[in-house]
Length: 260
Figure 1 (spheres, rainbow, N blue to C red):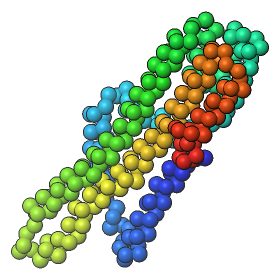
Figure 2 (figure 1 turned 135 degrees about the vertical axis):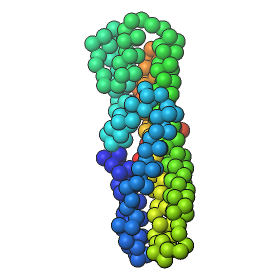
Figure 3 (figure 1 turned 90 degrees about the horizontal axis):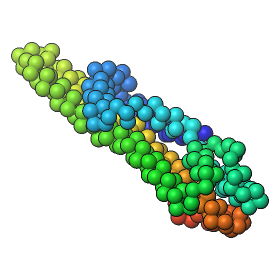
Figure 4 (figure 1 turned 45 degrees about the horizontal axis):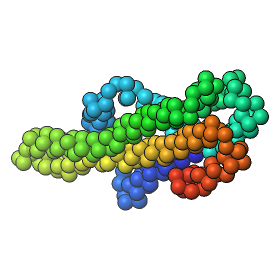
């Protein structure tokens, strides 16, 4: 449900703008211009595609799935790690051979532990995986940061194009053309508005939400790494739990309280 706050916030921004137009005595229809939208959206998408490889751009649909449905529950990670520690203490690491967990990183670590890899090998392998996750997340965030920069720029470019076309066709001897000057000028400026709206209502909020999810996921993955390494070290399950709970209540773990 927390992912819905992104949509709610975006809708609230649009509603506030529409309400502002009405309160100030404007007409909504005057702000609806399909060519202006196309002059902002299509070049922005094109610039993003030109900036990033298709392997990165093709993952955009998955970003929205993460925004709406991704949840990280560190307490469940702690409970699972403590359960694994208790199992290892009673039955040994080979007891993990048939253990099935939902987290891919944890499953990968358990396989290495069953195969008898030493603590340092497991540590390096998990850190490589976490670094790969960070790189993937940085690429995802960069898409929306770039789009947020491109949209206002193309909005301004479209405004300049519209103004040039308007002035080139202006005939001062035609009274109707002079009377339409204000209408044409406002239509030209709409593209600047669209560029700013797309950047500040869509792209920047998405970037911010992805950054928050990144912090939460990296914290949980780091918790998995630290917890399983403690199991390999033979630490007492109670000590492991206290250690992980302390991590959650301080430092990066505060993102689950501060970030919602």
